[in-house]
Image 1 (spheres, rainbow over the protein chains, first blue to last red):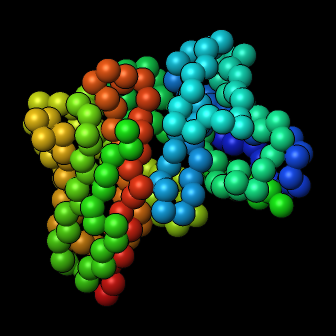
Image 2: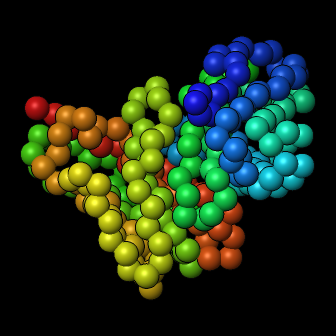
Length: 113
Length: 111
């Protein structure tokens, strides 16, 4: 059981470049989330999904797109990266119930120059 | 919508106690507590549901006052391993499919 995995672990982009971050979970969880973490700001929700084929906006969705084509995968895309998107990105998943634990992936450290 | 945490940072000596508070301006359905060590992912501690629930986890416990829309995390007889950043996450009564986290409280335990 790998839990929640994220690819890649580190990435450096130039302004204007695009990239996709992959989150995968093997726990058959329905709900998946993308957060970004910046110093002093805590974890801020970017987008989330409550099931395969569904996505919804979180607190800070601008500049990001997501897709959930398969239940086990949740992709986060940056179409035109900006320095303000330099951050650590965490993916999380949980079963369904609002009482369930969210399991976090190890994080992706992204730097945009 | 983001919950407020206090204090922002606290330094303890081993064996001392600490309280971390989390409050929201909106009605809460549940409160989640996580701890994050530097360079690692957040790790779940406990979930509290509305109803004035109190839970415990080793020497770490928490309470949830639904009427005041507040939760407190209690760390007793702190150990060096308790060092890290503590986050509360809240699920609103109207939208409990997502957890919104506070800015975190940095806790340092020194010998």
